[in-house]
Length: 135
Length: 116
Image 1 (spheres, helix red, strand yellow):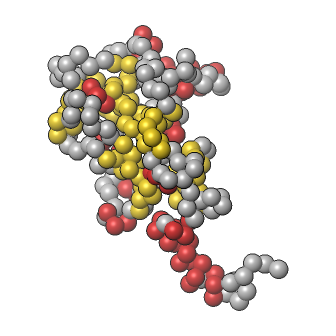
Image 2 (tube, rainbow over the protein chains, first blue to last red; image 1 turned 30 degrees about the vertical axis):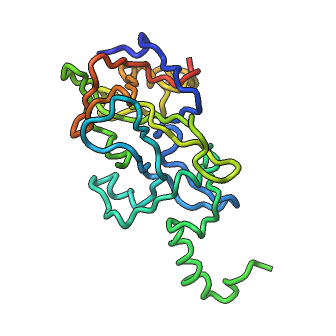
Image 3 (cartoon, each protein chain N blue to C red; image 1 turned 45 degrees about the vertical axis):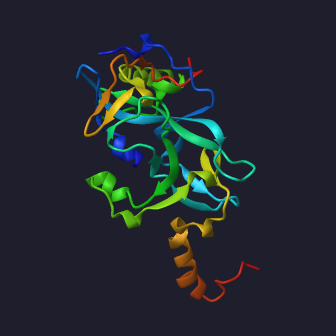
């Protein structure tokens, strides 16, 4: 087997370098106000399909969006949840990468925050005093 | 395609020898901003894949980041992942149940640039 300490380090990238597991997956996504939206469970990629890959370098494989969904059970037991259970936040909305990932639009504009809205409207909102900030 | 569709797939070199499995993917932000906002980031381009002969994959990425504390844990985990390699996406010839590399594909250390 190859000993990586004897291999060259690839210093060719001229921009920010991210490893998916180290810098993206399982990070909290927050909106500009710091409101939590979801967690990054997967990445949707453009430009790659099964089969022979372009050798000319003309096809760029890029991240189309951050995918969030019900992955707890599929991580334990395998398989994949139905496609409609996943929500995608476009990469073009991402404004900052760090300990959390900040997007430029408010949480309510994403389908991924529907549970938050549902609980707010159907449960919290029906509690007396639940529709305004505490005095 | 989703990233998790690529993860865990076996990778073979041009001769058919098994290098390991895909445990991570490396992206580079080196293009024009992809969004309209003032702080919009560049497109995240897939640069390469981290391949490991260990099925369980990397833990915390000590072999890539150059973090060396706590010393014992850092050195143990880096030693455990000493056979991990980076292959550039441009060197991937075929994506299927297994990934096949082109002949002459170069193997790189998985260390992040500037971490050594």
